[in-house]
Image (tube, rainbow, N blue to C red; front, side, top):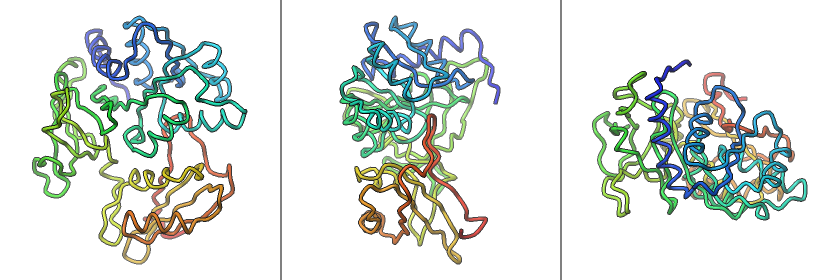
Length: 326
């Protein structure tokens, strides 16, 4: 999707990124490794230029495999890592497979974006403990810009309300959402003249907190981006987002990777969860899902290493409801 920006717009992107870098405490003394390709992904290029503007060292790693990136991270003594949550987990996995302790690298700041994991407690804890680093979530969109940065306490995302107008559309009624109500985020840009966007429906599902007791005056999205409006499942009357399932699965340190498939069970939606489980005891996982979600979910073990790994955004949710049960 081509989106054309003016030079002034691009400077605005860089200025918005300074909020994120401030939240992560990234400064001129840092050496930041960007674990992305050199493709047209605008998040990479805007982060790159924002880091250059701040005076830090930028270490691109496009075209490298995961082990080569780890080696570059080590030899360049990178102190900050920019990637998706899925790829941070993959980096830690490959490091251990090659007898590298990720916590012995010098990375102490990790900035993630592209998927909800950065504000999902279990994923955040897994990444931070693996690297011995502090993780800061970030959110943005090609059509809109870098609109959010993580709360240092890990409670969610702040909307940069000096640069964006945020509105919240109740999923239940379509009307303006109340404090703490599940809603769709609607964004208007204030500094993008080349491709201005007015009341853009992001499709991101959030829980706004308008009176958060923090140093920031910005609205806090509790739990970050909870999911996509079109990803929500109603399973036996319970509203479920893929990130809710991931939060539970990531609380099991023995689960290496997983995949969730939505199927049709008669007139109702159902879920099948496949897990790479070192303990090979899916019943304990099924019991936890039933306890936390109030639903019986089919959990199956698969062979270690058989599920896909991801360098960019993870794709662990598959919808087969139109095709029928597998």
